[in-house]
Length: 333
Image 1: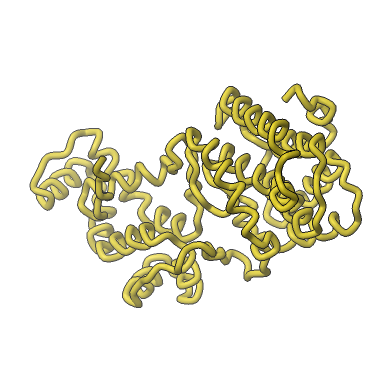
Image 2: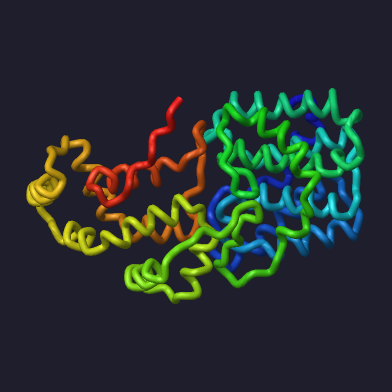
């Protein structure tokens, strides 16, 4: 963004572009955090210490989902909020530039990124000074969530946001962010454990489902129960559908001939499949266990205009074609 070029032109701390091994994730995140703090000229020892504490308690899965840059920017925004550190208007513009620095413009689209950040910049210039202190305190957090939604299609709380809903989301976030305790999201958890959303009650699931998943994934019961508790009810239902039909999945997966597979599926469905539908079905069958484990681990991050993960969507379409998963109910206008 040209309006704060004195910050955005500083490229001596570029975002790491290549994936790193798990053992170096924490160290590299620390480097990104330091880079962000330096770019923002935040020298307060207490705030820097708090930000380091926050990133130190972020699970590896969360870092993989949102990326190190957004994770670091969020830790800074949260540490400033809990410390009562208010940004000036120009500092707020700098924060926007630094937060947007990590956005993958190739994925979101350069024009979309530029338009979204410009609208936020205009809002800061027109409304930031008029906001009450409580709203100002949470402005960096509002910006980080909006940038995360722009980059990943989901904010840092896990809420899916479509590109065309960004402006509305940004305005709504102004009223919801001030009601939250930023420090509450940083709770030490066992590695790989995903926190259930504070705004949703844990979904219900049967002991039979857990037993089936233990057989399918070879995972311990406690591990599966934690994963299921963190999911949306709709995803629990999808996994349950596949687990109930696990014997059919196994039968289909053993069929090496596409013609035999097609004949068997069409016989059970009582209808014909097109070649395109057949390929969808075969691909979904091959990846059934991967689908289940990715859902359990929260690896299907929503993205794009409609806030969906297209890989997940395509696999589910294949299962629905074969009657292995209940189709999503159509919404009436």
